[in-house]
Image (cartoon, rainbow over all chains, first blue to last red; front, top):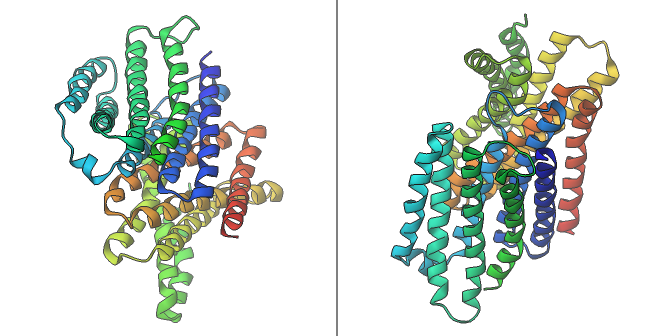
Length: 208
Length: 207
């Protein structure tokens, strides 16, 4: 099941990479390039993990090289967020965005009790930054009129991605294992769906 | 045991003489050749150190440690060049590819010394495959750096992202090689195919 789920995730992100790549070749927009990089890095990370499982029937022993690809993909997602936001949006401040560290920091402490501290700090730090900007962007998009409010789909989608990642890690800590009945497996499939949904959401944001 | 530093000296000395004889304009090319081969030499030492530190076997060292160390080491001379000389975009790409190519050449020479050069077809595929893989990693980092270093806010995050992409690609290649059999030949073919596809897409997009 783990192999199928990972292969499915790789296939979906590869499809996202191809579609966003074609979109970039047509429009030559920086946002499309960054989305292509996001999908490309995620697909590379998934491919490494899937191949390791497929060829050796175990997970990497020293450290997870796939994480470099996945971390790179989150970096490109953050850059995409930054590129899509206007200067006015970046200056906009709202207390609602504090929800991101309020949720992220306790969760980070929780994850650290189960796994590697450095890796959890890095991942939670990135998730807090990405969700902070998304909540701020969402609050800003709600007070806009016309096409500008289309940006909210992108921010909602990024928040969904962050929420599913948090849920995935919680399920991995509390209910380890990768059978069909394990919540981890279902959250992983949900993550694949949220990753693909970023493509139409970015499309709407580009139109805004 | 391979005396890798002796191999480095033997390969670097004719290049050094050539660099001194050639004009100033060609000197940069030789400098990046030295940087690439030097990065390969240092990577070998650092790989051995980390393999001992994590008590990793040859397989774990090849698939998990070597890609990280080698890509970071290849990036360092480029970062130095970018920070000190602030070159134009086209020069960054060339520098990255030359560094990657000389890294691959030095790695291939060390491989031949260790394993012999008896099997021509295998050595031929390995030479092309490894060369293409390092060029792709160099192109990812070089092409990406040329793009991200034009924008201040992109510099740090963009460099980390590109490094992550190059490390993962390199690790996939090494993983397939370490498995052996048909997977090994897929690994040799994969970078060549990606390089050809990339070239085609790039050409058609220009037209």
